[in-house]
Amino acid sequence: MESYTVVSPGDSTPYKTVPLSSPDEAINALKHSSNAFQSWRKTALEERIAIMEKFLTSILSKKDDIATELANLIGRPLKQNYNELRGLEERARYMMSVAPEALKDVECEPKEGFQRFMRKEPLGTVLVIAAWNYPYLIAVNGVVPALLAGNTVILKHAPQTFPCAERFSAAFKEAGLPDGVFQHLHISHPTTELLIKHPLLSHILFTGSVRGGKEVSKAASDRFIGVGLELGGKDAAYVRQDADVLYAAENIVDGAMYNSGQSCCGIERVYVRQEVWDQFLEKVVQVVKGYKLGDPFAPETNLGPVIRTESAHVIREHVADAISKGAKPLIDESLFPSAKPGTPYVAPQVLINVDHSMRIMREETFGPVVGIMKVASDAEAVQLMNDSEFGLTASIWTKDVEKGLNIGEDLQVGTVFMNRCDYLDPAMAWTGWKDSGRGVTLSKFGFDHLTRLKNFHLRVKI
Picture 1: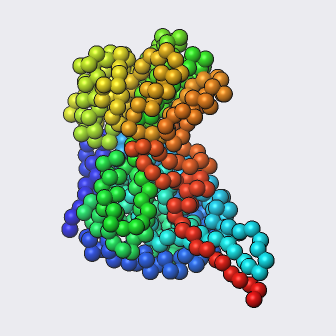
Picture 2 (picture 1 turned 180 degrees about the horizontal axis):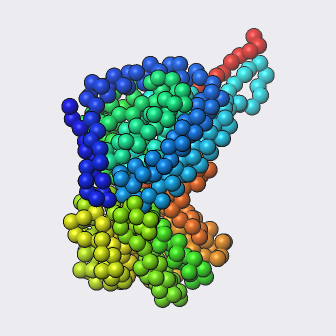
């Protein structure tokens, strides 16, 4: 039997070995899910919501165990892992609250002798493929609305966070979810492709890299099913001359460094007006130097390792490429003795004298590094912010709300922030432009891709 061993980035030791399901086992799970759909689709929405309430109670009751497990699985500092569980609850409860309105029949205008309405029908079995960097937040974005809409779900987590999928299954079982309505599978890429190509699968929600998104799209290309893609980002921040500079610096650093920079909507590049350049840089350097890089379980740690040594190597390559082309690092890496080549521990870094010829300003770095450029105008900032293959989020830091809105209208991204960053509001549609993906999760619109319309056109008087 094939297996996968999860290695903890904190100390590079094996944490857990997980057996992989065979192709036959995966197909049997899909058949089981398809059979369970026939009754689940007819279950009243009120009952589905009640089960979700019990699911939340169950999974949140294990928050201490989950926080500890996340520190082992992904290296995020222990104390920060509770934030992810609070976010899971916030998103799930919001989707539960809007489900009745979002899923209700849409009545047509009255017409004598007829009754006409459109019903939002579930699709069938939805495959949720979740990334490792926020394993609970990413999974809940798809799992909860898919189940509320009447679909059955198979969750396939990234191998590094396979144990998180087991937590979902245990909580749903404790909540009394009928057998087969939710399942998790630990499967290889070839087996995942087999599932995607199978006629019983009805929809895919994928979160991961651009390369992974292309592979999923290619596997599904012979089938007329929906594929939602939440992919990478190279998210930009713009600090105007009228910004609260100290506030902007503190929050942008947090947006760049939180989760060791491993956030699809984390800040990876910053454009700063020349009028506040010196003041902004001074504060950024001060804040970054205050980080404590180290053991995820140490109480003083607020910056952990990245997910694996290979990822750290890519981050260091991006920094080296920038320096070789004239960039200047502002952070002395000796301040962070845990950061050593050949380990997943990477020192936070701030680079200036950067430009868009450098990988650090164009490719997704996914680490605790940010490049900062000086700009002379709003127009220059907008041009540079849009000069990217990605289009997930962008943030504008200004006291002029009208000007911020005007700038936001010209940005080619799915979400425009002003005076905040790196946060998913469940009331708003989470969506990306360009290579950041397609489709929508969260908000009332998150149900649209998980249902299909059926028209009822009834002549009631003959």
